[in-house]
Length: 247
Ligand SMILES: Nc1ncnc2c1ncn2[C@@H]1O[C@H](COP(=O)(O)OP(=O)(O)OP(=O)(O)O)[C@@H](O)[C@H]1O
Image (cartoon, rainbow, N blue to C red; front, side, top):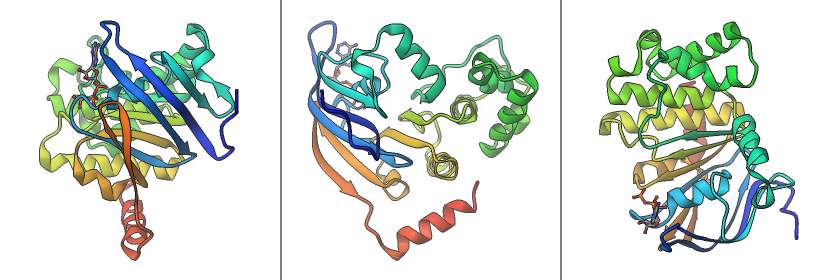
């Protein structure tokens, strides 16, 4: 087994995945994600974006191929080790917000930190800070059923960022938002990730994300078909400067 290159925080080689009913999910995907990189995974519906994120994050194990997180082989880890890795090092955002209905906004956002043993007061402070950044600070005491879907998704994004993951997997995080809200929320997410050194793997079919990411990998029918790098232009430098104004 060959270990991944040193500067890749995540590395996958020749991933093959088949769903339980036999449908092919991935057919030979290889990719590396550098530390601090913001990588978009794009492609049409059903191209395998969610399946790839689930394999990379250890939610499912590939039928064949390897997934490495730093020097740890995720594909050979048992369920307990994978669970611990996901809890301690990874964040996850679903296309639809999955919040705990009995908890209010800040308690939901603070939950991963408290599960890791952070004190309630420190977890609350971190949660409130992120809820403010996501423009839902005034909803912190409301429970999910009292919030709009777009507000619930902002709470879910705050929850993923508040725990300070090494890698954040975001599966269509802007899907429940109004079109006008999508770019500002994605900009907040990507800018926050950059300023905190969080690596992001972002599944999207929103072309507006392209200027916010470092590289886009395009999937089609479970295969990588194209990689697009953000050109090293003055606009890109301007983007980084502009982003730093938001977070
Ligand atoms: N649980 C499942 N059982 C069987 N087939 C599945 C399952 N989940 C996904 N698939 C199939 O696997 C393929 C890849 O699905 P996946 O959800 O990874 O694609 P996607 O690019 O994320 O799509 P979308 O943009 O719609 O979220 C599709 O053909 C899909 O129908």
